Length: 315
Length: 303
Image (cartoon, rainbow over all chains, first blue to last red; front, side, top):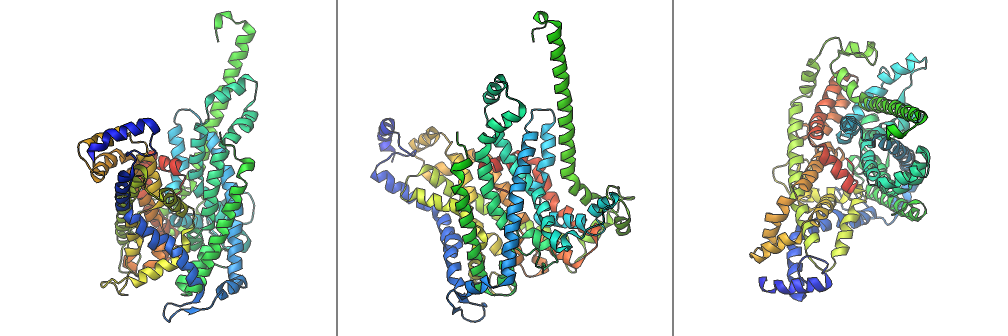
């Protein structure tokens, strides 16, 4: 192996090889063998735990299976039944509502916060820590706290009473339940988005602002003509993750709604899948529901990517 | 501002502007601190409520402090469930999160090294495939994975298979992961070629180069991955809920959710439990904030 090192250096100087080891058929064969060795766990994981199961889920979704008796092939029956299942449609509607409200609102708030936090002032590290803290907390524990905040004798109703407003039932109220869960999720999701936006803001060259100031641009117009356009890649990126994350909402719903049996008002797609598969042991039905969820997320993501050219400015 | 050359009018305007700037700065400080406190309010309520008596919780105004420090809420919470203490849940969570973290550190760094250093067929396709699993809602694999774990034998468990044991919660981590592979590959690409070249001249093979040069250099990136994986495992609810069956095997999250179902309305104990379950993560965050921030900015992934 060591004897060919000069060759690598020569070819490297001529055509700058894409990777660090020298090119050539022998090299490549050896590379492939080593790569295979290093990738063995990953390849097994991919086949057995992620890529394989995605296909397996589709296969299972075409059957009726309670895990005790042998699976029965039923074709697309599960899908047809899901479309007529009120509980599933309700879960779908709730999840879409949750996503459509929480994602834009969460991003807008995070953007405002990041702009405010992007200051070179004393003690800013401490201030940021306060804003970032919800980042590491489990949705389970946080949902418990918010359950207390929303409870009939809880602090939120106390505050309402102080202003002469009659107390609300929040998570126990069918119309207010989902907005209450959304408010909590936005609070908890803020730090991650703020951190991404802060990194985006700090990557904007200061000269741009200096030039704009010389031209007499005010604070607001600088934000609109420099900050916002240059931040669109961060906003786009955060948007994708927020979108996919929002579709997977489960923990908050499981804890905040009546334990074990959330009312119709707060069931989400993942809760529906959990309930169908692991409470009622309808594996085919749960599989079909997860494939529908997968397709919806895929289509939403593709559509979102399509809008990219219209509003995202890459430098 | 060259003071001697300026006319009094200009000086006057300059001081007025700097006074305005100072006022703006003070306002900003005030707003940021107030906002930070607002973000902390749920934590504050968690703390004060956990120290109040149950009667106090219902009678006192929201921003009041407890009249006495009722730490007994914590002991009540700790021993609230029959046959187990909260310590058991803690222990279970620590074991699962540690094993999952170990698995990810080993296998993700191996895969990342392969992608960063070797040249092989289908490399781009494979890497794209791994990245794609990052944006796929993982719930799609819940059903087949459950079936797989139910099929795998485990003589010591009640079911005779992996269901009811903690195996499904960490064994997967020893088979690679998209986040860690991506994060570490980015880092490995920045390692200068000369280091590996020198080692190769000395007769080191790729495995030795990986273990002796790449892994030690990647400590900050490995720390980031470790912290995130530990946090994800610690905070996970859905998987433990599906796979764990008996109270003594519960993690803190499932234990907490179960506790809530059993003790409706016992707010002080519940807040004590929530706070205790959050404490390890909060401490980790205060100690290693920069790794959290780096992990988020590098990959955009959330908690």
